[in-house]
Image 1 (cartoon, helix red, strand yellow):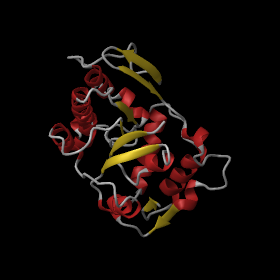
Image 2 (image 1 turned 30 degrees about the horizontal axis):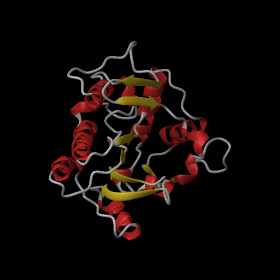
Image 3 (image 1 turned 135 degrees about the horizontal axis):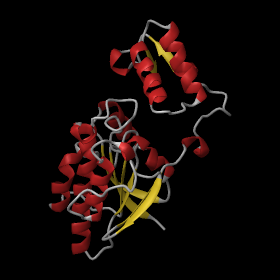
Image 4 (image 1 turned 45 degrees about the vertical axis):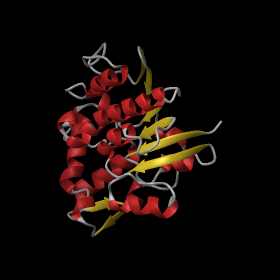
Length: 245
């Protein structure tokens, strides 16, 4: 059964590769120049609508179509344990709430057209479940059309769960190593994809690596062995900055 979808924070469109021959993209939404160029090359007939904050109004005005599925992974830097974790106080983190407005606009148009509600598929990092401002609770409340943020039963949201109100919402943390991503069983190692002399904008500095190691130790997190080796090597031996290809 084929379906249509709209993609936000599209990147180079991994989902379009995964859904090839089973779904039809109606539009993308990506602002960064490099991935936008990739999209234009591989998907010349699919419009890239750029800024996702403009989408609700354009959908309501019927400038763009309301898809069966809305998919995207809003920026994770605001929630990641490797960052400052400013969460919804970071404009990148706030794009998570913009997602709610996009979905509401899509559902409004689809209701007028006597179509079923849109399905949202959202991806992010596990850190979003444990922010101090309860970012995930805010997202759940928006999706569930509640007036106050939903609250976890413990200190943070569980790794899997569901909420059933006006919308049914489910979530689950998936370990990428079980879905074909390189891990200890593969020959490729993180250290092999590090290179020197790159732009500071994309670099991992000695200080950054030390910070990741400290935070992991303080929070009792066990880093993947290859990642820990790479971070240790940079923090102990290297004075230059390095970047992931």
